[in-house]
Each structure stands twice: as C-alpha cells, then as structure tokens.
Length: 226
Image 1 (cartoon, rainbow, N blue to C red):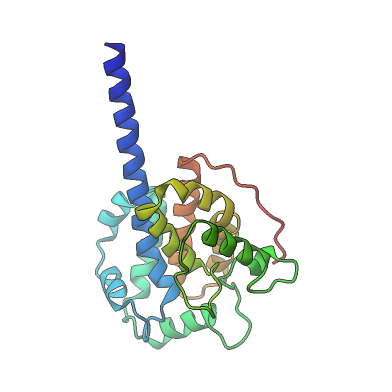
Image 2 (cartoon, rainbow, N blue to C red):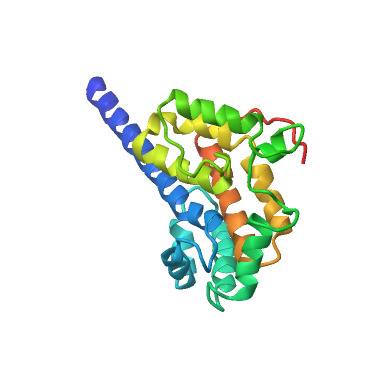
C-alpha cells in the first residue's frame, strides 16, 4: 500500500510540475511580443488585437503566478491603453521612447545596462548568457545586432526552454533572468507614461516574482549600477 501511495504522490508532483512549466511557457510567449514589437509596425498585431478585446476579469482569474488582484489591475491598464487602437500615436511613441529612442532610454531593456559597471549593452552579463546558451546548444532568438539579454528576447527564450528544455528553466531563471528583471521592471513601471506599458511592466514583474517564489529560487542579486 505504501508503495502505491508513493507512486501516486510522485505522479501528482510530476503533473503539478508539468502544469507549472506549461504556465511558464504561456506567460513567456504572451508577454514577450509586447516588449519586442512596435505596436504599429511590429510583427505582433494579433497579440495587440487580442489584448484590446480581453475579458480582464476572466483573464486575471486564470493568469498564473501573479496575485489575481494584481493581474486584474495590470491587465485593465493594458486594455485601457489600447482603447484608441494599437496604431494610436500616443502608444506608438511611448513604445519608441521606452524601447527604441532616439535619445536616452529612461529604462533600457537590456540586462547588462544595470549589472555592468560601465552600464553598456553587450556587457559581461550578456556575454555570460551567450556562453550559457552556446554551451547548451541553444540558438539565439534575435539578430546579431540585438543583445541576447533584451527583456523581450529573454521572455521568449524562457517560453522556449519551458516547452523544449524544461530541465534548464530554473537555472536560467535563477542565474540569468531574475538577476535583473525585477529591478528593470520596477524602473519601467515608474518610467512609463502610458497605461499600456505601465500595466505590462506591473504584470510581468508580479508574474516573475510569483514564479520565483513558487519555484523557491534563491537568486544572488548583482550590484546594480543603474
């Protein structure tokens, strides 16, 4: 009987972990396009369209890792920010102000800007991530001109790992993404003037924090230079 109980317990734990990994793949895939794509000219029109029609209460109730009330508030901000359409000038220019430039970005989306002494892109943490990926046979998702530690690329990579290499998810979160993402997302929420991107920052941060807590990941935070 004990053996049967042990087997049932193992099966339950396996199913729970499988569901958690599926949830990680889901949130990475959903969130990444909003960080990577210009609302007007980018390659994610369907993602923006779906968010504009979202049932906020239903989505918040099912959103993984984040507290339901936090998810509801953030999703409501995002939907409100799309009320005038994804091609509205205010939304488009806010994306470009936060992620593209010209000019100094108020919350740069690259990890090494915060963790490298010189606050540069393609810094030491970028190179460490690149080496980690190469050692595990993981292909980069962006082009050669885009640092691998762009928040959007890292969320997309998180989704890929959860779907294809789940044994690497915790290591990736602990050693490469959670080392800087919460710090960055807090800064993005403060810098964002548009409700869509403020909501996106808050939702992503709450999700990442919940993910860290649920998976009991002890993250050694680096010194932040910005």
